[in-house]
Image 1 (cartoon, one colour):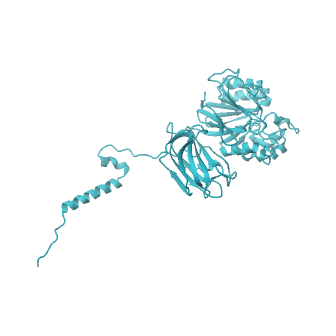
Image 2 (cartoon, rainbow, N blue to C red; image 1 turned 180 degrees about the horizontal axis):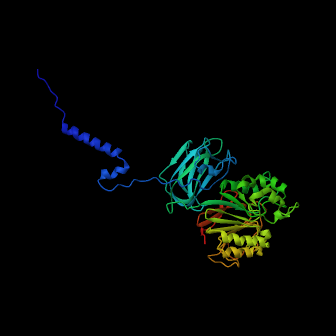
Image 3 (cartoon, one colour; image 1 turned 90 degrees about the vertical axis):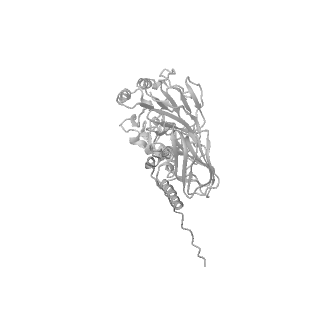
Length: 453
């Protein structure tokens, strides 16, 4: 009987196969910091993920389900808070200001049960014109991780077009990743909302009542704090009027408000400024006077009472305050503007104050009184355009009846009357810019970016 013996295995083939497998495994498990040992030379570069650039940035939204669902909740890093829109309405959107031009590579959206079935992620340089980065038409909630994006702009928004539930849209977190122009966000960045001439004697039950709408928009922006430029309450600013009107709208963020009085606060039959002082208390008199100052970042803010610019004590206080500050950037605000193209026109009462501010190289002045929006190019107290001048904004469209533009003043760059809204001011340690945001959430005007003197 012939026996057939199978040939022994070829050791050279087996050893070669084992060596290949070991090499593959070694390459797969090698630590990145040992890449140089494998390559036999300098350590190879390991790509790093783009950083998170949206955390804590100012945010706005088309609507809110309630005061506890602010847009900023989607960018605060807290998974227990969320933004929620009004229920049952399409479209809705949420927007974040990244603080500087950024290149965006990734967006992660963590939805609450009230998610978007269809939405777009868009980016914009100015908050007005938008470019699509990504689009979803069959969303099912949970977490959407949108990668390999390529877009450049300062503002990013999620624009919901079809709800996934009968409710609204709600995000626990919206994280934006990428790089800013200089590789890092600007230092000391913060946002302020400002308006003057606010609460007429009306409530949200009247469709023509504007201050509930400007308050809603101001709250959506969720700034570091709020400024008011006087005439907070019409017509005679009694304490009962403050409680019945202002408090029901702008009063929602009273604790974050830093007001100044206007002429209407002086008309109180109980005594000039009686209702104003009782309503705002130490918020309006933190240093015992209706004028005060405070710092935020690299900015020094000065709140003044333009009803008493003839008071030598206030003028001396201002001189001393300007001499004391060590901040590079200075902004001041009061009620009666030196320059205005509206019905009240230029008001020379503040010219001596302008001279002091100009001498101290102040940057920005905000006012109200005339019920329109207007911005001026940098100018000196005589109204001459100059690069080292002060930029003035009239922001009197907080809710009182609009005034028409009557005589356009030199250096006036933009004027809007009849469209209610608020100023959204963005500050860094060395720059500032702003947008005039209408009650519909759109930017009606956006300024250039200015550098502090």
